[in-house]
Length: 293
Image 1 (cartoon, helix red, strand yellow):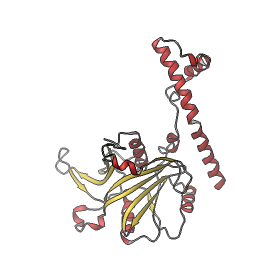
Image 2 (cartoon, one colour):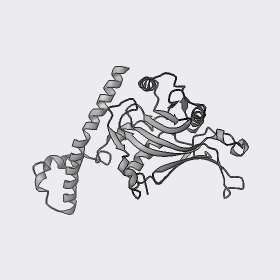
Image 3 (tube, helix red, strand yellow):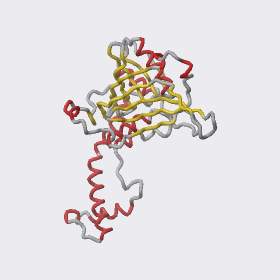
Image 4 (cartoon, helix red, strand yellow):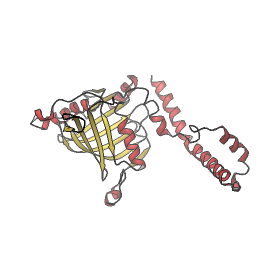
């Protein structure tokens, strides 16, 4: 199993290293295609390669015309099977953190919760790979308050690091009757205001934690971005007075997420390349939004 994982990782890194060459070739083909369409002469620097490139252009279709990236490879098998998630915490979790993770187990369908004990991260990742888990979610705390969430996609990454703020669990709300029970149906997702390249990357990481729901499910999960803070809300709706009368009920938990790092490997790989990280000087640029408007 270890040799197989090393081989698969090596193949993935090799495919990733080809991206620069493929992108360069794609740009050359694009220039020739544009020149032919507009009736302009072929650029001087491409005249020696024109015959070979035109032959490749003739053989391309809509699937092969645009080069694939490592991002495509990371979630290539996501549509073939439902996600299978392992939830765990930092070591010696407090009672509020344990309660929060128990509630997250119901938020993510097909999730399994594991008591961390004395296990090392690398052991957890290897075990998850061996048992076909698609994601590992780690929740951290500071003095009994959940303050960090790490989502690591298996087998190759990416890993997203989020700060957790304003956590309100179902356990904190006294009036349990108004909330009702937590449904386990696959939810519909609302992903609002993720318009930049990084925002689309974040959406890709978050949406693949949830399987495809049935059209008639009445459970809704919302990730709404505002000023780079992602608000998580969890609702169910009921049509009590006919199709035009919809009653929306929040069933919790609720919290805010703040993305601060995306790595191209799994959480156990300290040498993994950093795709994006928030820097101290970025906090002063108030008007600049990284995820959306």
